Amino acid sequence: MSFDILWGGLFWPLFRLLLFISLGLLVGNIVEGLRWTRAMGRVATPLIRAGRLKDISGASFALAFFSGVAANSMLSEAYEKGEINDRELVISNLFNSLPTYFLHMPTVFFIAAPFIGRVAFIYVGLTLIAAFLRTGAIVLWGRFSLPPDSCCGDVSGRLKEQEVKSFREVLDKAFKRLKRRLPKVFYLTIPIYTVFFLLRHYGIFNAFETYLSDHLTFLAWLDPQVFGIIAFSLAAEFTAGLAAAGSLLGSGAIDPRGIVLALVIGNLLSTPVRALRHQLPYYAGIFRGRMALKLILYNQGLRAVSLVLVGSVYFLLTM
Image (cartoon, rainbow, N blue to C red):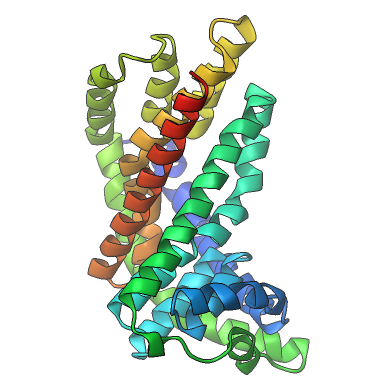
């Protein structure tokens, strides 16, 4: 294994991951201290009351619009202090899926639009509807699974507790919390990311992706040409599937409906591999091992169900 392979496949991506986690924690803490989350806190208040969640959940929801890392770190700290139990942590983490989606939606759209043009509005719109469905389901889950007295406090008040008066104090507090969280992030993320790099380098992931690509006979109702899009989505990153979709769309070989369905299915089928590649190192750096796996399973499971529902409705309505 050459140094170029190690640098391009492990050292540089790992450095970027740790850098962005660190910056996310720092920026999230600064945003929290500068009161920019207060407005989103007012949006979260009626939702957490409907879902019988605690004020810490609403505060994390508000912060997730600016930094998913900082929002999850807030939940992790509350869980370790005993302020929320296992079920409340799971529901609160899932509750953050909507603001987390909004955090990444512009990037997804501006990557997709150059490849598939106006079809990007349909695809991103469907994933947005799925995110709203997840939020509704999470609120209902909290409503019917948590005791009535579990909801307490005020989100804006919770956010205000941690505010400071000057920007210097904001920075001091942000760096103090960063120093407390980073050792755990480095200790867990580096070995996990390294293991998955080795699995990918020695073909374990490729073998799994090839197996999935070769066993898609249950999708025989689709236009055969969309399998290229799905295969590229499985074998590589989202951009590869978009490139294949743009090529087929530009040549007129497939209509926009087929492109949208192929991208949704590719997104759905690639979920397990992407969860292991990207989410596990990230979550393991914030939550304890077993809880990190539990949260990933719940997140990806709910995400998959919502995509299936939205994709099925789109398929039936456009027949």
